[in-house]
Length: 250
Image (cartoon, rainbow, N blue to C red; front, side, top):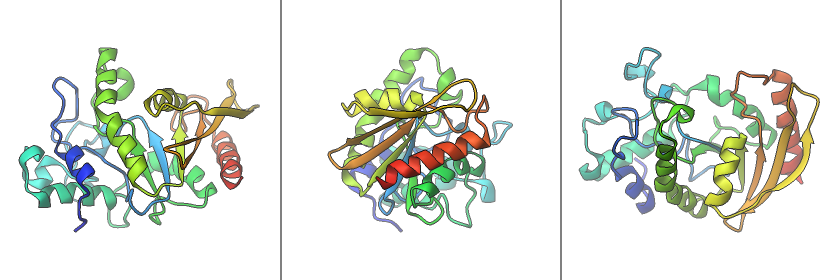
């Protein structure tokens, strides 16, 4: 089983914040896929509730389970759990895209198109996915109220993401959607440079940004959330992938 780095163990053991609408029985998702071996990472807001729950709100179990849960681990308290239990949380994150698992392909395959254009893949282990906040919430991020709750979760989890970007071997960070871009820039104290947008698809142009964080990780970001059902066509997704791939090769 994977040896747990100290900074990751600290994050996994951190208690669920009070009154935060974190999915009951869930564990923090420190990565989707192995962040230690990946050279490309995508970045979103926070994990979806469907990583832990079915459409009726029941916990995913057995072959449907995607990640570690308190039920699968046999514990309700990660803060005092044995090191082997903490390691299992990390192991389930690392193995998320393995063939014998149940990744949420409907969501991740939208990003896989862009990841492939940059010469990587979730399914080969050369790419992984990270989030600004590692907790899955119910309701979803945009429906969390009051808005100060989102700020509280971001403030608590942003130091871990910065540690992750500093400690691992990422060469490229792909940022999905303007909501993530707006939160990332002040979090890592960087201003991304805007480049020529993608025009002619739908009602809005897709803005593109580039930059560097942690002195070495290249960042390419786009304003359109690829998983949005509003005005995001397969043609637009393909165009975003092609433009991001071109930027990555420069």
